[in-house]
Length: 434
Image 1 (spheres, helix red, strand yellow):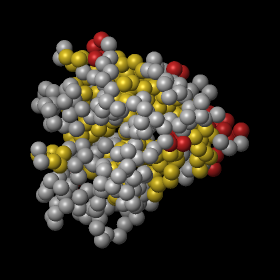
Image 2 (cartoon, one colour):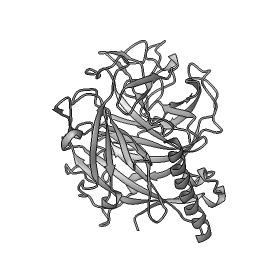
Image 3 (cartoon, helix red, strand yellow):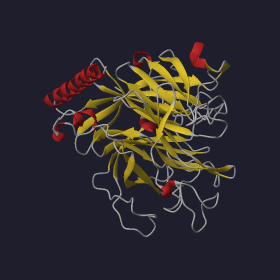
């Protein structure tokens, strides 16, 4: 039955928590594998979704995804630094009914509808290496989109990480003020006394609205350089989750998220390996699903990708609770400090997923997650997407999961009723906002 894992979740997990379902009736849930779709690197959509400014642009680098319940469409952002095309996001459709539990699922369930360039604050497209888009969320209150820019700490120059609002046309609206401690300064390597800020390529990958829409969260993929080392084999890292109050536009709190060490070692010592917090998805006040992506060159991961080799990726989903965590926004460094970190509980190691023929699901570089539509049987879906890094041996992968209750039938019925109530509430809210 392709059941991934039974989950014992704290409090009221997932949408049941948002509908008032008692915690005891929502604690036992499961995630089941619905299927996947795969696009090869270099894929260019037909029509307007495949070009910007008259030039063709390939799909790739999809690092963030969100679902619009009003239109039943998705938006996905590319982390292309204006190399293969202008920095951009896509509008697309996904037919989960066409997803297959197969190593060769095709892409019939994926439709690209439009591509939109991200605009600079003064207007115009971003130039080469001027921005590194990563997270993307749609604000249903006004239809605008928020996106995170990772910034840069490199010999080519330092760039501050940003969290920005834009219109559906990609036009700049505003920045939220990121605290100075996140801005890179000091040495390029970030290993000298007095160095501060994000490490290169380990900054704002994630983005999530709170369930009430009042707070926007982002997080560093790994520790700030003044907070400790990056994740490695046998070495965890202390990321910071950063909360913004959208009504005032100010940063209000920071919480430590404990990133796990690299899951599997590389094929040989000294080869590249990393693990990081790449996405957050709010479940309830102070509770999230977190996506950790571990990669190591030549790691013995299960599953064989389209290129006929293991991918080196280990993708794990965690339940995260910040309600008992210390607000560390007053701490310029975590080194030597006393604090309570967010708690996390493993929900799913995606290496456990299997196709209908029993083969292991090969995982690309999964970096985005969103709630998808509610299935006809009442189950809530999750949709994940991979950043293929525009690599020839990689692929753009969409994976669909379903959240199901495990307990006795009465509790299951309450859960499904709660999901249906939330869907109706969302539709009523959408009508009143038109």
